[in-house]
Structure formats: C-alpha cells, structure tokens
Image (cartoon, rainbow, N blue to C red; front, side, top):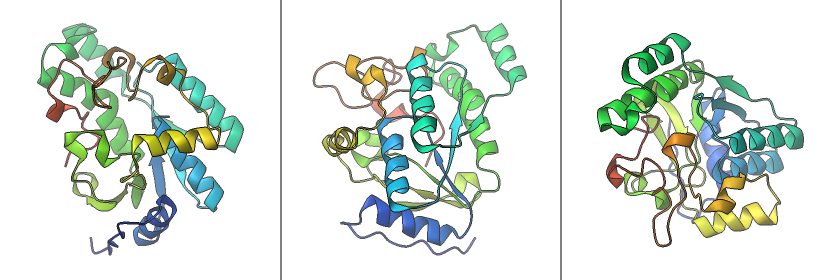
Length: 231
C-alpha cells in the first residue's frame, strides 16, 4: 500500500492530525469508540471542526451500564450514528462452556483468547472497507504506548492508516477539555476509574497508580493491551 503518511509536527493540534490523517487515508475513516474521555473528546473536536468521521463501537457483552449511558448521551447530543459490532455468539458460547466465565484471569494466553473473541475479531469486521481508523490512544497512558506516532500504518489490519489525534495530550488536558465543553462523561470516572473497558477486567485505581493500572490489574504493565493495538 503506497499511501503517503504525513509526519505530524510536534505542536500539531488534534484537529490538524485528524485532517492530515483523513486526507492521507483518501477514503472512509471511522473512530473506534469505547466511550472513554478520549473518544468523547475526539467526537466533539471533529464535530466542532466540521470533520466528517464515522463512529463504531465494539459491544463485548461485558460492558458496564455506565458505558451504555455515555453512548446514549452522544447519540442525543450529536445526532450520532454508531455502528455496533458484536462477538460471534457461537465463539462466546464455546468459550464460556469450556473455560468458564472468568478464564481470562487464569493466564495471559486465556485473557488474550477472550479478547480475541470479544474484541479483535469484531474489530476486523468493523475495519473492513475502511481506509483508516481513529483511536483515543495517548503516549502518557502506558509503557506499551510510549512510542506511538500520530499517524501510522496498521500492518495488522491490511495496512490501513491509524490516526491518534490525542497522542500528546496529558490526562489533565483531557479532563480540562471535557469539563470546559461539558461533555458526556462515564460516571465511573467519579468513582476512581481512569481507564474503562469490560466490567470484569476494570477497577478503580489507587493513589499514585498509573492511568491503566485498573485494566487487567493482575498482569504486568507491559502486557496491558487487548490485541486491538498490537504493534
């Protein structure tokens, strides 16, 4: 694939990164929305800048009620169309019948197997026909994300472009933007959560812990990716 990937300047704004990535993709681009503060901010930034951006979400079957509330609020506020993708029910049934309901806590391999069924395979369907996808990843979030670039090629998904407009934002910047714009916010953030995924795999963090400490908290920090963002 010969699509040109622009190098975003160090002081590029999220709007500039989004526009550059979408222009370089030269085709349909959608945001992978988990209804985090990051993803909600991107939706608002795109809306205010008049940037056309599709939105899809992965319903793993184990999301928190509070996550669905944010989705509903976004539809209401922006008249947003969200394309939902679900895991194959046969695969979920087989996993739970053979391994039980909490096998993902037994080993890294079993956790990856669960994420593959509930997230990675649905993502592959969500990305079909797209020239690029947008994420809310930030370098500050974890050791596994410190070498991200603003616009990169996703070789694991056919070489389409992957656009990370908030790559250099700090958590403080993100919270300030959310509060200034009065954006919909998952109620779990007020209970000490700082990164929210599936309910059984997410908890509130303790004082001094990093932003993703509450994700798969029984694993080492370098393993805390679900497979959607393998590099």
